[in-house]
Image 1: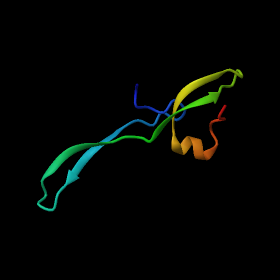
Image 2: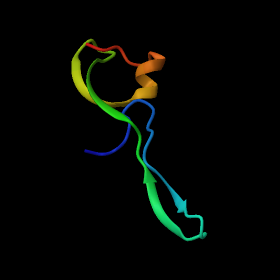
Image 3: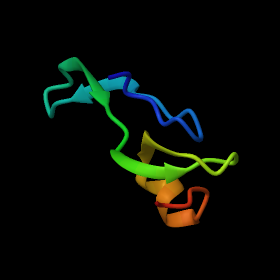
Image 4: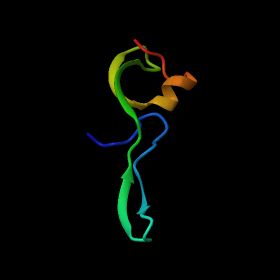
Length: 63
């Protein structure tokens, strides 16, 4: 599974976790993806990985 929203293209973001002692370690922020059944533009139903922001904003019609 590619950790990427199939609607908006949101993918993992990287950065640093900074401790009080200023020690930094790399980390990844993953998008909140849900595997849902979606009605496509052609009217067919397929399963897609969609982020919750796209679900809440109404960019996707659930089947």
